[in-house]
Each structure stands twice: as structure tokens, then as C-alpha cells.
Image (cartoon, rainbow, N blue to C red; front, side, top):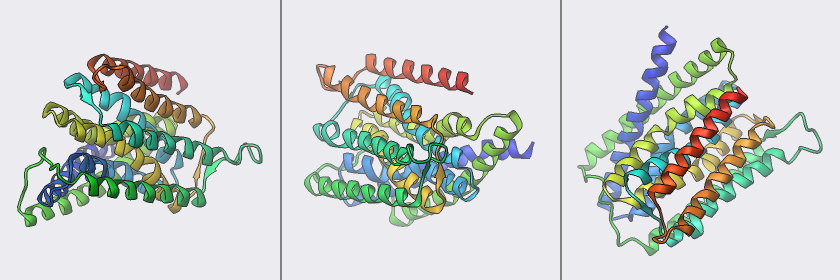
Length: 318
């Protein structure tokens, strides 16, 4: 019984911890006049991706590779179909040209890259697929390239300031960051332990738990952040948060996880990679077909219907 209670408490700590971390970091960023899209792609994305990072590090250390991989793939699918779907229903999301031409394609490339690396040995040893430490290093290399791109964007667009977060005294902002890190660590540990226990007790695979319960739970910070940003009409934060988190999840989090412990890769997970590619493509198409170059409410409904269909498929797949 205690395991289930800690599992729920862990999710709460993950959400609050990410919120405190983002609040503190964004307050500091506002002080130095960093642009909205850069905040969304870096500090907010990093902060809201911390639950996935902590869960994956602990899962990798525990040897729970399916949980680690499922968490990343499930979170990326939820980021686009669930989170941007909900945000678009609250307020249409216009996308900057750079987001459509650079960040979303970069996110799509990351999904294709991990799919290639995971299946590279398919013809040599079809029963032994994995994301190796070398693959993890490659993912981290591309993550560094992405950060260099973000740095270039920040140099070009530094005149826009972050309006979504209140500027706090530096001491208070630093305290929030520290409190958030502690909450994320405890929340991540309890969530991983609980997820493994539930999967064992109910006879479900760790992959299924990772793709559904853990992925949705660790994506709650992104959901809350993007929903609040959309309500405040700060669409750059809403979109940058979701797209940036997808890039962080695959290149940074999966890269770190593979470096800690090689991740055995189930061939069935290729469908989940295809879903990430489908969701990213759908996002590009929705913007291209809309007259105002925005993710409108119709697209939001379509995204949510696709996500529901995916969850139903997972339930049937078991």
C-alpha cells in the first residue's frame, strides 16, 4: 500500500518540482532579458523535462530499460498530440517561421536518428537490438548542435523579454531552483519504484507502463506550462516548451540514459517512433494548411483524437 501512496506522491513532487525549477530559472532569465522562444526551448523545456530525466536515470540504474525508453517515446507523443492539442483548444497557437523551418524538423530528425541507431544491428542480430553507449554519445553530440543553434537564436532575438514569469529576488529564485531539484529527485525515485511494482503486480510490461502512466505523469509539467502559457496568449512559450521538450527527451535524456546503461530495444517500439514522426508531421501540416499559420482549434481536436486512438491501440497491444 505504501508503494502506491509514494507513487502518487512522487507524481505530485515531479509536477511541483518542475514548476519551482521553471519559476526560479525563468525569473533569473527575465532579469537578463532572454527572449520568449529561447526560454521555451531551453529553460522551460529543460525544467519540464526534468521528471523524464530523473525517471530515466533511475530506471537505467535499476536496469529497467523498457520503462526508460517507453517514458521518452510516450512523453514525446503526448507533448504534441495531448499537450499542444489542449493548448490549441485554449487559444490558437501561431508558430514562428524558425519553429516551423528549424525546431520542428530538428525534433523530427531526432526521432529518425534514434530509430536508425536502435535498428542499426537489425540485419546482424535481429534479436539483440539496443541503444548502446556509442549511440548515446551520438545523441548527445546532436544535442550540443541543437544548443549551439539556440544560442545563435538568442543572440539574434534578445530584444523580446519573458512576460510569463514574475521576476523574483535572486535569492528566492535560487531557493526555488534548489527546492525543485530536491523534489524532482524524490518524486522520480518514488515514481520509478511504484511503476515497476505496479507493472509486476498487474502483469503489464514496463514498456506499457512507461508509454502510458509514467509518460503522461511526467508530461504533466509540460501540459500545465503550455496550457497556462496559451491562456496568457504567450504562444511562443507554449509551442517552444513542447517542441523543445521533445528534442531534450530524445537527444539529452535518452542519450544520458544510454551512457549510464545500454538500453535493450524492443522491435515493437518502432511503432512508437513512427507515432512520434506522424505527430511531428501532423504538426507541420496543420500549420501549413491553416490560413493564419497557426495550430487552430480544429487541429487541437484532431490531435486529441489521434492521441486517444493511440492509447486505445496500446491497451489492445497490452
